[in-house]
Length: 110
Image 1 (tube, one colour):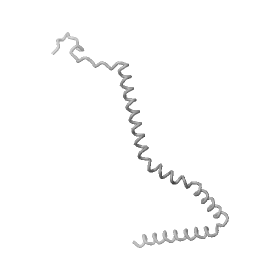
Image 2 (spheres, rainbow, N blue to C red):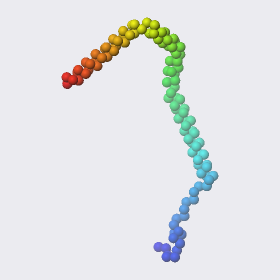
Image 3 (cartoon, rainbow, N blue to C red):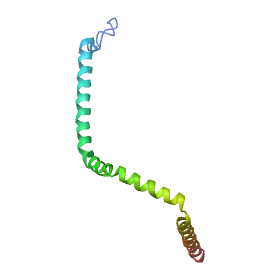
Image 4 (cartoon, one colour):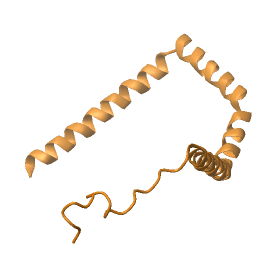
């Protein structure tokens, strides 16, 4: 036990010095470099994982012009002669409503 007149701070362990500004800067630069390397590696992994999707998209993109032409031709036909499409639409709506009502009746009986 220290003497009464002893300096209370003297028996404590010496405080750790904080790193110098240059040492801290060096640590931060090393962390930054490691983060850049990690980002580069993850970017390469992402590119490899996305290759099948990119190939599929390129295959679809080849047919963009023919699909646009076919779509515009179909749109023109719908606008000019909408009779068959309206008839099909009405029948589809009636079939949907019939199925919905049958499901509703099935729930009521339970």
